[in-house]
Amino acid sequence: MKVLLLDSCGQTGVALESAMAGREPAIDLTSIHGESMIAKPEAALAQIAEGQFDFVINCSTFEQADLSRELHPKHIPFIESLVDQCTRCNVRLIHISSSRVFAGLRKAGYVEEEQAQPSTALGKDLLKLEQRVLQASENNLVLRVGWLFGQKGHGAFDELIHTLIRGGDVYFQAESVRAPTPASDFARVLTAMLLQLYYGAQCEGIYHYGSSEVTSSREFVEIVVGLAEQYGHIDAAALNLVEVDDPDQYDLPSYPILSCNRIREHFGVMQRPWRSALTAIMRQYFQENPTE
Image (cartoon, rainbow, N blue to C red; front, top):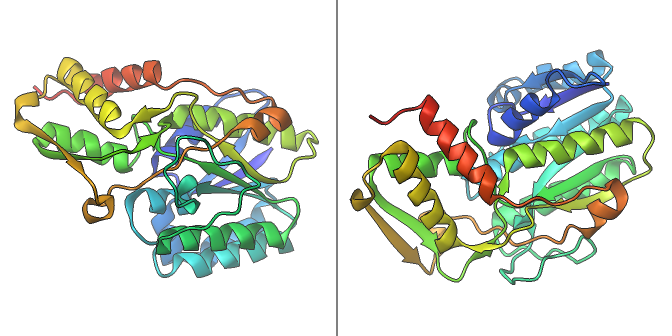
């Protein structure tokens, strides 16, 4: 199986590279850095025509949405060109999108059949790209995920850890609930999906995945701070946990909870909890990046 991965520097891309390395049956993985796609889009698109790939996985849209209120101005036209190129070359596109296409913060998970009605410019762009991907070919898939965290790769979680090390204000959303999901768990799920699709699974459309555990924004931040204090020996007294009512003012993204029944029914994927994975990630992070 030959796979092209778009954006290998974020937490999703790093986790996918690790999950696919050395596994049997072998996955021949080629990666392209997100910034190089914007700088040299023709070269990235040419690789699709020349590489005879079975799948293209686009993580770049999700990675941008994790760190910004809006997509790069050149990103949408690039993805539209990517969709056209995959269609011409008969390559199946797996587009990673975000639960941020939904506007609400309800505790019940959104299902795939619900109409997304985003209230932000970012959410509207995410939905536009989803629709473009699905309209281009019935073989393309969209996988929506919520908030991901991982030990390696740039992302909002990485920025949170650096804030804890530096000290200062740590913001979290009032009344916010989410299902934080380890990037390694996301990679496990997507790799399993790819193998089933490669061997003939007749699945299409939109799928959701996220952790089986729901928590508040406050609780998650407090757990991360406690683990950082335990393993990184950070000065918790130098931190000020600040609850905010307007998350957009502080660039705190909201990640509505997703229902994951469809992916379980079609791919046999079972959700996993996040707490033990978070402990292992924090321990290993500070082992490799000691703070004292």
